[in-house]
Length: 164
Image (cartoon, rainbow, N blue to C red; front, side):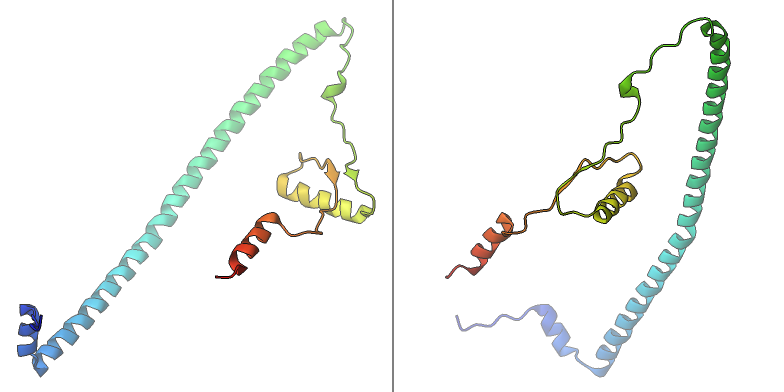
């Protein structure tokens, strides 16, 4: 139990611990660190040149795809308009079909809890329209009951403050 085993590597380092050995280790360490740093700088510089060209090509492809889609859509609309013009001549003699009530959008005002001002309703509706888009509908607005603590927060508080 009283024996102490020393690694042969440590013995070799201990025996050659001279000024030249220390200088060699320090210089080689600094050289390796600076070399790897320069290599990383070169790699990131290369990425900085490659990535924008790839993004530019992708944007050009997307723009060409959008142009082709718009041309197809315009051709389809022109074809549909031509067929509608032909059918409108025949349909002029027929009585138009009644419009279904579900086809028209119904803009109902949201159900608002008493005590909430019109300005607050307008602000909430505007915020929803900005975040969700113009098709979003606010159906109701009510105050949140903040009388108690969130059950999960209360459980965490009890768990973290119980005695040991």
